[in-house]
Structures are given as C-alpha cells and as structure tokens.
Image 1 (cartoon, rainbow, N blue to C red):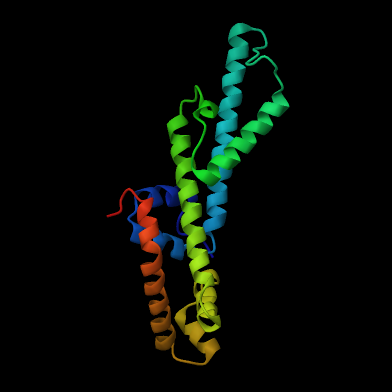
Image 2 (image 1 turned 180 degrees about the vertical axis):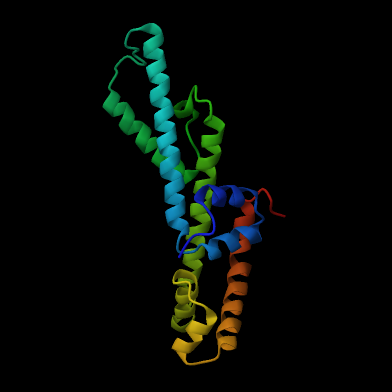
Length: 192
C-alpha cells in the first residue's frame, strides 16, 4: 500500500490540525503512524548530531587546536549523554536547550521533538482505547484500520452485509471520538 503522505507532511499537518483532524490522521495512517514517527525522530536526531559535529569542527578549525569544553573531556561519554538526552526528549517533549546550543535550527528541532512526543502520546491513547473493544469489534477495527480492508471485504469474510459493518465501524469511530478528543484538545493549538 502506497502512502498518500510523507512523514514530514504528516508532521506539518498534525501541527496545524484541529483535534478532529488529528484523530482522522491517526486513523487514516493507523498502521504506518508509528513507523512514520520513528522516521521523523531518527531524521531529527541525525540532523542534530550532524549540526553538533559541524559546530565542533568549525571551532577546532577556527582555533586550529582541540577545544576542550569542560574540565574533563570524554567524547564517547558526551555522545552517550547526548543520545540519552535526545531519547528522553522525544518521550517527554522537553529538551535541554544546551544540547541545541549555537544551532541555526534549534527552535525547529525543539518544536519537532515536542510534536513527535505529542503524536506518540496521542497515538498510544488511541491504541489503548481500541484495545478495550470486545472480540467482534476488535476484528472489525483490526481488519479496517490495521489491514486496510474495505467494509465489503470485511462483510464477505464475516458473511454479513457491508452496511452492517459500516454502521458498526461508524459507531466505534463515534465512541472513539467521544473518548479521545478531550485529551487531544489539551495538546492542540488549533483546538477549541
């Protein structure tokens, strides 16, 4: 199945979206959503680390000597600390701005980290809500959202009408919407 949206477009759309649209994006890209978030996270980490290295290289070149940034310089330890700090930032949405010191795109990186954290939290809430449904509803949810099957295909497999499956999924979606929107609104600048 070819994606209709790139991960950077998903991030930008999610940033600007209303709570309803955010839910719609999560449902539309349900099986791909975690992978897309992972890709955004890894690309952002890569850009941050590359820019950090470029800053260090420029400093060394300007002074033509090794620059010691602390009393004890241990590049391996510093890199490990940076990796853990970045990993934690993508979980919490909060980043120690000293990690982004002197970076041209520091505010962009900080905003991306914050949004990825929010998107992960929203998606996990959706997954948790969906996991509470009973066996019959779970089958419909799984087949429609995760496997991308149409109502007709699900109905054929269940040996019932597609209208019945569509009504059931519509009911499930309304229940999900009622349950999740209040939470999504809390992190949504475009919310009510």
